[in-house]
Image (cartoon, rainbow, N blue to C red):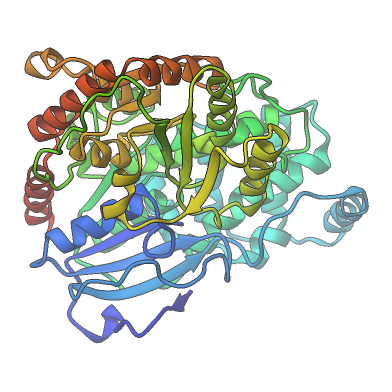
Length: 515
């Protein structure tokens, strides 16, 4: 754990009202969730916040991307790993096998089994979350050395091998079990500054940490699921190259992944972390009824769940340009992080297909440093297709200027919650093409009653089908009157249902309840 910047530690002042738990996002990474966090902090000036960022390893991020508001009184970091995890090569795998044999000969048995190790066994091999499990997790009585070398730890791996993956090479499973358990032990044995309440911005590691800290300190715990953490991890697991087996999915748009035993273990692990967070939370907030139903399937108690949609600041109604008989190329933009879950490759392929029929001026707007390898693949695809002139990668842009540059927002994500960029586009009268993920269909086609009566504010497409997105681009490029109608509906929709004031009022009431 390290302090960052010149922020005063919350140990040196009275306890902050809320400790915000951010897993790899605010204040070091730009994007929708980080912008949402910043908006919440600024919108609740009478609430004091500390920020605890949970990252993978020291050095994973650069400088702060946000100027922290005055009501942020602490900033700390925790790391799940000492160094970036990397896949094993052949020599490393052979060395691991030798280490396992040495381990079996030299390890010793602890006289009193660790409660935290007992909790890990329940997470991997049993169902259900109760206060006994929370108490074992809170015990924090397992050192990294014991996790790595104690005989009881090795026996847990053996039991997992027997019950969960009996046909998987033991060396592969041994390595993956260590990768699952090590971050949990690091987080739950760390020392951090206390707070009057905890608010996690996702389930997973941040949710686990917040749930256990709240249990130990007997303070309230709140969780906001922008997406569905376990579902998003399933998408990443399907394409993960650090798991030593055949790639799980040929069609990443499939709704039911076919996982190998190792990938199933990881999927179950992430879902169990979510269930621990749901058990301890006093409230579980999500962004739409669609996502609320998914939370219930994953084990969230219905009585704890509530829906608070994202909100944006409304602007005066945009001035619509006049229709012309020969319109200029349609200005299309992708806005967001250039990372795999946003499936920018499908966006580029769709634009290539559409450009064969209509004129488009295309911009990829957003940070690309989070996954440089993927960003390089995207640029290379544009070059391979011969579309460098039409598809421009312009990086981060000031929020106030983005929607003056484009007439149509296009998202091809594998997963979304309730994309803030869609609401921002709507506030500028910009319609949207988006894949059918999260609550995007409701954002585009409207919810019940008055919202649906406004008409569509864009077009919904299938996941990972560039032909679908291309067809939507061609349709709106050729029918500028339809594009205009979608833009009018977009502005009316955000004014009707997604005002920033309503969101801040809801969180103000929640914070008042828990602090």
